[in-house]
Image (cartoon, rainbow, N blue to C red; front, side, top):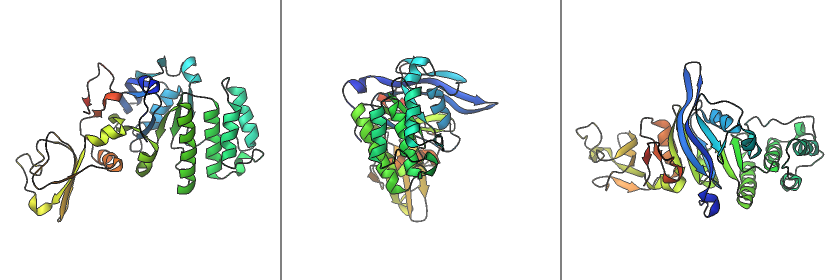
Length: 318
């Protein structure tokens, strides 16, 4: 997807400063700082236990932060004004199994003053979901579509989705994503989507947040994040070891991940200058970048200009 332009891109949908959540002595999320421009579809990725769900719940106003703050379109997360502009869909998709689809939408209308019945019902009908069917008898894909219809029917400006597609088969997932992205694009909605489907992120998202070890490692435009990384490879027998223990030729670059066997040595780097010598140089895929950061912690966080929060120090993608 391409990034948003114009008025939507100039606004900030979500700003997080020093956000943290502690359980006992353990921080599941710590010192997260970023801004998410309005109108973007942002993938939120990280290993289990990295704090993704916790972050979404804090932004939705369902959980209090132990440190820092989150603001939704300038309003404190969890406040009355922010809640009206946010829709949150957790992974378990809380729907009443005994309700019909029509009754589910009617409940949404009664609970949400900004409710758009035409939007919600149209989203359900487009998926060939019978309005008189009991929710408990729907397929996984149909339940997901109803849950998304309830979220969209609220007419939110920010939609938070926690692994909403994990239980769907690939075809249904593709159809559901297409329908969701169509509504998002038409209405200028901002989406923050937690997902383990790393291979599919580049078809869904134009923005990325990656959390690991309780902290933020990557934040920004997908294209910008990819552009400041290079994928390197060389025959192992042609790569001597440098004085710092790294393969020769990498001493001036930030090495995110390196892997070698008897035949080839590969590396993902943030170049500090031209890459030469024995190394073959190519642009990485988004999946390669994400997996490298998930597998190898310790690299300095990288915050692209669109995600940078003034006054907070982090390396900025250029």
